[in-house]
Length: 173
Image (tube, rainbow, N blue to C red; front, top):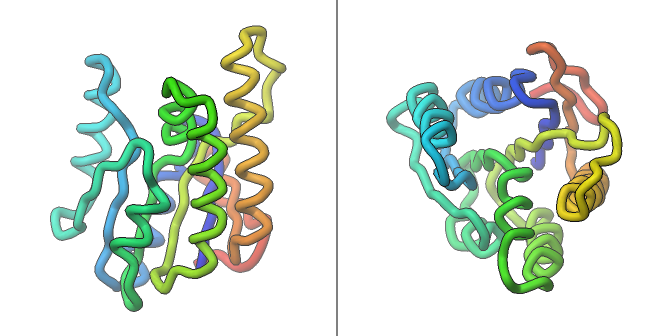
C-alpha cells in the first residue's frame, strides 16, 4: 500500500500521516529528509520529533531515499517519509545536475516493489503563482511532476486543507 498525503504548509498533512501510521498498529520507521541549516529549521525538526512516538525508528536521509527504502523494507511494517518537498530541495541544491532526476526515477521504480506500508508526505506547490526565480520555478515544476507520477502509482492520495483530509484517490486509511 502506497499513500501520498499532500497539502500546504501547516495544512495538517504530517499530523494526518502520523495518525494514519499509528492507527495501522504496526512497527513504524520514520524517514526524515529535513536538514537543519538554520535555527528556525532546527526548531521545526524538534517540534516534529516531540510529536512522534518514542518507539518509532528514525532514519535521516536527505538525498538517497530509494536506496534507504530498499534496505529497510520488510512486510508487516509502516514507513513514513516526511517530506518529499524537502527531499526535492536537497536534491536540487546539489552540484550534480542529474542527481535529482536519477533519484526521482529510482524512487518511482522502487515504490511499487516494496512490502512495507508506505506513507509519503509532500507539500503541494502548484497552487500559487509561478515563481519569478529560476530555481524556484524548477522546484515547483519538478515537485509537480513527481506528485503526478506518485499519484499514478499510489493506492491512496489525500489532499489536506486546514486539517481536513480530502480523498483524491482510494479510501482514507
